[in-house]
Length: 315
Image 1 (cartoon, helix red, strand yellow):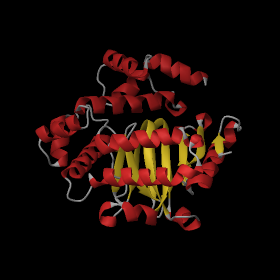
Image 2: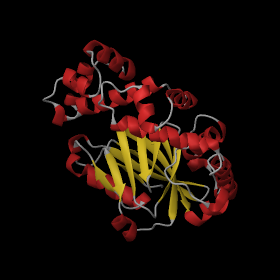
Image 3: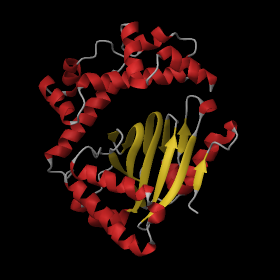
Image 4: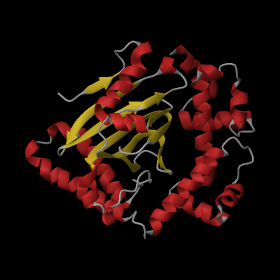
């Protein structure tokens, strides 16, 4: 039976340590951070796809960090192809940042420090590939860590669907089929990453959009945040900014609104902010109208801010 480490049956005070140790057993050492340990929950599951280990990871932590100390203490010969299944995440490594929506992917090298930041509860799949194996199939033999690989269309969508299906059906894949599945995975990955080669303009656009999103994150509480201001901070035209967001399938305004709503929801659920009113939290995250905030919150999460806060307090 493949290892499966849920926290539901563990005493609340021990869940974070149990989950972190489970993650270490499957993916290597990390340190876990949370703003509310009393509500911590997560799960780590290990499966096998074509001879590759693949971990299913879910957690509501704020972030996890892999330091040089933890790298020195464990196996660091693998690269992780990480696919976001639920929630949003920012993965950082070697001065790069990958912003992941569901279906997006990125590569992380276990031999370098990394940081994974999460926006509420999230689920990911992590495919573990020996570094030498990955380098042998990549264009230019160069691993580009923490670069967003879009799963919206093209080869990104193909490997997204293949990896998700293989993970769900892992128990049904016989060992006689491992070589074929393994070869298919590597070929799909190599074809996908050709679109992210140094000469490819699509890769440049992905990194430009990542820089824009990072700038938005740094100014998210500014009620006067606008496309013009962000474009100026990023050194591009407003027209180019809108074009980059359009290519990603979401407008500037929608991205900012969703990020602000997510941060407001996180604080509404956090007991450390229980002394702040809903309006105070909304205004802190750039909203300037309580009724508008309430409508947007209900549209995004299916309940009013007040209902959400009360439901979280009952947990």
